[in-house]
Image: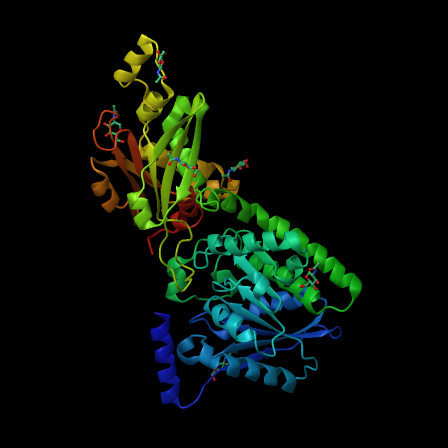
Length: 490
Ligand SMILES: *[C@@H]1O[C@H](CO)[C@@H](O)[C@H](O)[C@H]1NC(C)=O
Ligand SMILES: *[C@@H]1O[C@H](CO)[C@@H](O)[C@H](O)[C@H]1NC(C)=O
Ligand SMILES: *[C@@H]1O[C@H](CO)[C@@H](O)[C@H](O)[C@H]1NC(C)=O
Ligand SMILES: *[C@@H]1O[C@H](CO)[C@@H](O)[C@H](O)[C@H]1NC(C)=O
Ligand SMILES: *[C@@H]1O[C@H](CO)[C@@H](O)[C@H](O)[C@H]1NC(C)=O
Ligand SMILES: *[C@@H]1O[C@H](CO)[C@@H](O)[C@H](O)[C@H]1NC(C)=O
């Protein structure tokens, strides 16, 4: 889609004969102080002037002498790589005509504007970049980006989901372990309660209205937060007064910790999908299937690609008085080669090949007293036959419990509910492998339906297997925290 857009733009500007970008200058509100020029680039189909209040909030929060240029009038109203250079250079010219003396420029770009500005900025007069509801597109990593970059995310941004920016926060946590300076050079900050539209003001294009979430704070509050965060980053990046820079660094450490309150619960549940080549969630599923026989059971897991997964079989080995179960898993992600922000970050499903409880019981050579055997045979022991639906419900409850209190309240109050249907049950591995887990979103909510295969231990072919296609707890969490909060399916 982006390619055809670029083609249309190239054509439009060719026909028009020239690029038409322009900018509006907002002079500093302080008479004194070091000068920095903030050059804004709008999101798709948003006017440059829509960032006036945001820019003003940054000027007010800063003790420095901040100039602002709001670029706009991109062809078809969409910022794009072909016009970025002209827009930024035009803004610089306008700033100097208006009286700016310094050459400290910082690009501030919203949404799609950020996608194109961050690649343009690398070889440009811009000395730093701020991404509003935007991020460095994969595979670029924060630590490899050659200039300081602040990534600002809204907790309730429905366009640039918090789960996407959480990935950058996770990188930052790693980077900061090696060098605390990354917190000042490439901060990633989450604004509590704000949405995508609140990086700007005024009417939003239909694409934003379709995806965005209801904010929990006012536009005025959102702009004040943006003012604080961006002005602190400006001080750290351009400030030359030592005490001011030290204070700004302390602030950035505080913002990093505060943002963790919202990013870390997500990242904790995300880590259940995959840890190196192992799926902890698959191990937990097998543990639930083992139930009361878990005590003498060790569970291995290996994540495999589609074909090796299809061929794989789970196995049980005796070890001393216990057993080792080898399970396999496949994690299916939505394909997103362009790293588009509206795509979900969590897996579509996790496929797990486990051993059945009967197979575990047999391997452990457990003989139950007769009355317990009777309970099992009568099916009164609920735990005895755990379904994929049970596993999905466990995933959901974990995701809900590990969401922030505010997120739990929002979901309970107006989130579209998640409903679990009984498993689709197949008798052969082939049938099981061809059917995807049910994951159906509508205006009423999300329907989830696991796909199961359980073979008897007396079966001639592949006895004692328990296969499940299940919901990733992180997908449940992404639903609770982002997608469920829209009134309609986009
Ligand atoms: C866009 O163009 C219009 C018409 O020329 C002009 O009034 C407006 O200031 C421009 N906006 C920006 C942000 O440059
Ligand atoms: C940490 O990063 C800063 C800024 O990128 C750099 O100047 C400094 O040398 C780094 N320190 C170490 C110990 O690598
Ligand atoms: C869920 O939250 C609890 C309590 O905060 C925490 O101890 C646990 O590690 C979290 N689980 C995951 C998978 O993040
Ligand atoms: C189970 O997995 C372990 C570790 O990967 C491996 O050493 C062992 O051979 C496997 N056992 C079977 C029966 O496949
Ligand atoms: C299983 O346990 C019974 C006694 O509970 C014992 O007689 C039998 O030898 C055991 N079988 C194996 C294969 O360990
Ligand atoms: C156990 O669960 C499977 C589906 O997961 C179902 O087909 C089977 O009938 C259940 N068995 C009992 C005894 O409930």
